[in-house]
Image (cartoon, rainbow, N blue to C red; front, side, top):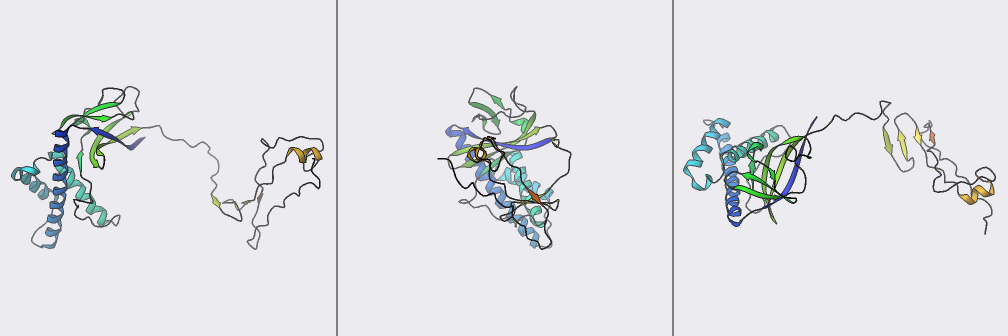
Length: 269
């Protein structure tokens, strides 16, 4: 069985790499705003039809004509188009609100690396690993967890891609991992019972029974006096447990509480 997981790590970048990555993040944000403006404007005009093929053609032409848009890698630009299209599909299907422009203040800049094979992840020391980022080269990241398919003792699976995200304390890389795990088998093939927790009745079961309150544990002193245990029988209060008492629901819907045992009349000094 395959499971999708993400792992976030801190990047160790040089000043030149930070400036280049900032330019890529700003270009990705501008690409989103331009696509959003074109998509909404094309939808209002009956003579123009917005399609993914036409948007891809405009993106290629814009990367040739505008120098600062060319700082964004081609695959990252295609991911911006896919994310914008997915946002509109989620809006049309009622799962999310309509997408909007990305602000320079509120929105975090990010760059997507869709192909995991282009990363070339490698562990170089106990605390550091390295990977290859398009138009940046080799970068180091903090190694805090084994990635699937990278180390010998790591989990089975592979890294399918990554995303570079800028936060308050620097750039981070978020790996998208696909982990292979064994199918989870149920521990018991018996009957399934539903449980509803309450206050007056601690547990209400789907078997039309109610789990009442626990009885007070039997102490050593009360066992020595002969109540509630047998005369002369000593019971350890730490290990003594009493099961839940169950009772069927009454016709009026009220549950009678289990009577509590009264403490002994005298206690040993």
